[in-house]
Structure formats: structure tokens, C-alpha cells
Image (cartoon, rainbow, N blue to C red; front, side, top):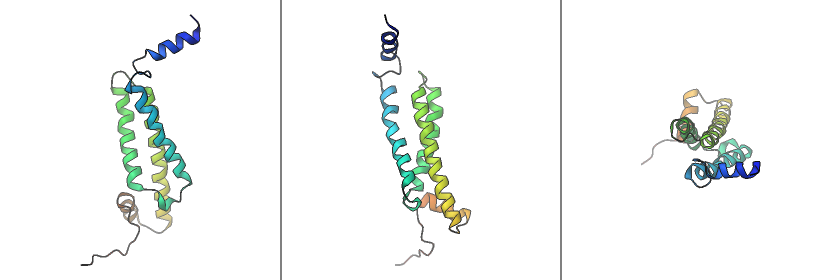
Length: 125
């Protein structure tokens, strides 16, 4: 049997191969990484801090979890590590923009969580 056929057969019959969710879920999740990378061209005011904060948190959790589950899923770990890096990059972009705009650390954190840029919002009845 040729080396290529052997490698393909091993991949096909793997516990994390293309016949399992362990392959397809991380493969499709790369779409989130690509979307995050394309957001690098967007103006920082249009990037959601709350969304990137949640992506960073879930990516960090799933990166760790992919080494705890059986079978260990390196593809899942890789996609989530890249997702965490992409989300972290956007959060740093937002933080840098807000600090350079004159926000305090507290205002910047509130902006990331709430997404409200207007400091003069008042309650009206």
C-alpha cells in the first residue's frame, strides 16, 4: 500500500477524522477566525467589544477543553487559539482607540462591555 493511501486511510479512520463531529465542528469554526481577520480592515468604532470579549472567553475555555476531552482534538485547540488571538487583537484595538480618545480605564471597560460611546447619555422620562 502506498504511503499516501496509508496516510489517507489513517486520517479517514481516525477518532477525530472527517467522519466525526470532532473534525467538522472545528473546520467550520475557522469561518469565525476568517471573519475576525476581515474585521481588521473595519474602522475600530464598528467593531463590537462585547462580541470579541465573548469570543475571547469561549475560545480560551475551548482551547483548554480540547486537551481534556477524549480524544484530544488538536484541530479544535488550533482554531480556538487563533480565535482567541483574533478577538484579543480586536479588544486591544478598541482599548487603544478609547484610551487615545481620552477615556479613562473604567470608561474604556464600560465601552467594551456595553458598547456605548456617548458619555452624555441621561435618563429621560
